[in-house]
Structures are given as C-alpha cells and as structure tokens.
Image (cartoon, rainbow, N blue to C red; front, side, top):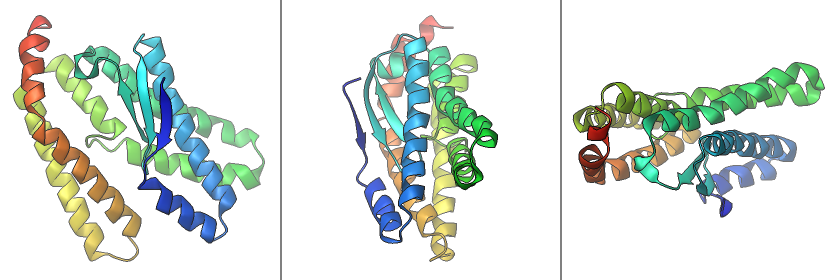
Length: 204
C-alpha cells in the first residue's frame, strides 16, 4: 500500500473530542477505524488484490484497489466483508479486557458495525449488495436501480437529520458526505456500462 491518510471531514470530529477532553475515546475511535480498514486490506491481500491507498472516513474508510471495478465480484464481496469481520473480532475480545476499556470499545465497535452494514453505497453493506448484484444479476440496470434506491434513502436521511437538529448533527454531516459520494458514483455510472460490455458479459 502506498499510504494511509485521514479525510479532512474526520478531523473536526476528532478535534471536538479532544477539546471536550475525550482523548482516550478519540484514540479508541481512530484505532477502531484503522483496525477496520486493516480487515479490508487483509481481505484484499487474501484475494491477491493490491491496495493503492486507504483514507480514514467518519464512518470507516475508503480503500483504493488496483483494478477498480474490473475486480471479480466474488473478490469484491470478500474485501467488503473484511472490515466488518475485523470489527466483529474487536467485539469478541472485549469480554477479556478491563471494563474501563471494554465498555467504550464495545460501544464504538457496535456503532461502527451498524453504520457500515447499512445497505447503502458506499458503506460496506452497500458494497456487499453491489457485489451480490454483480454475481447474481450482472446487469447495469440493476446497478442503476440500486444506486437510485440508495440516493433516495440518503436524501431521506438528510431530511430527517435536518429536522431533528441539533441532536442529529453528526448524522446530518455523515449523510451529506455519503450523498456526495453517491452523486459522484451516479455521475460516473457510464463506466459501469463499459464494465458491463467488457467484463460482465464474460461472466454470463
């Protein structure tokens, strides 16, 4: 892997925690996110896929893989599941830790797992759904339908989070960030058409 970086949007969140004196909580969150991404990278290594870059996001992270969408769907599925499996491993060891560490660590892992397994692109749950679509129903129209549903759900999330402010400020920021990611994916969906023509047809 060339490098691991932290997305600028993640820094205000960490800075706020440090300002409120939650340095240890900040350390647990950052460590959890990094371990989660290590799970994805380990899965990529298992699939013999090179990781070009890893960016830590507020909800987890993004890894840039060599080959992009040309990676076989089954390998995409394994890589997508790598992070949640790493988070489950963290949950499994919490009973053996000191309660002062175990309780906040368990809370962080459960929140991280819940957020990432929401079936919306580009979360891990969304990547799992995308991989399953490419495995069992490899048609670009199915990809577009899935992205459209994800867009509607995220827009709904932004609307609800905005109404319930200020309690839902983090959810609002996260939803807006995911919405931007989804819009970019939709704008460049033409590459999915190219993917269907040059790769998917060889799988059917």
